[in-house]
Length: 187
Image (cartoon, rainbow, N blue to C red):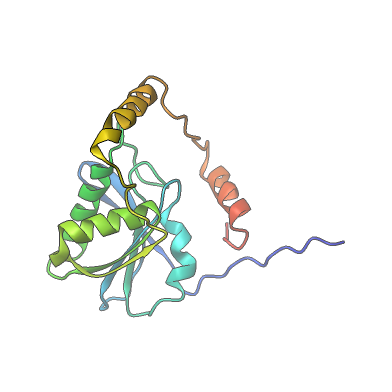
């Protein structure tokens, strides 16, 4: 039996990498410019990167200005010191929307955590969002006031033994890890 290797994916639209200073951090953007189309932000999920939207980018209209930021602490974006709070992602998105499309509402496509951020943002700033798509963004879990002590107890426990995240020594090591899960991604 022979193992078949999937052919490398050849993108139809070339990405133009860019770094912007957003709220004191260098955020990396994967940008597929059109020059004149509506701005559409592609928001990745937890433990992901904006680069994984390439497949979707190639299926979207060529006249759309597509931008996929790497959230703070993900991909090639800078890491903030201290802990990360969900509100930080909302504030980063608000700053990005203001910078990238100051006069027009944007289109938001969010996956997983990015979908949750996009939905919250659309609810908070509906005047800044033209259209919204959430892919596997199920929202924040429902909760009741009586469950608050359990959640805070868990949070306090995590503060004394924080979750260990894997840090890749090199960009090629990160690419190799992504390609194991997505064999059609080019190097």
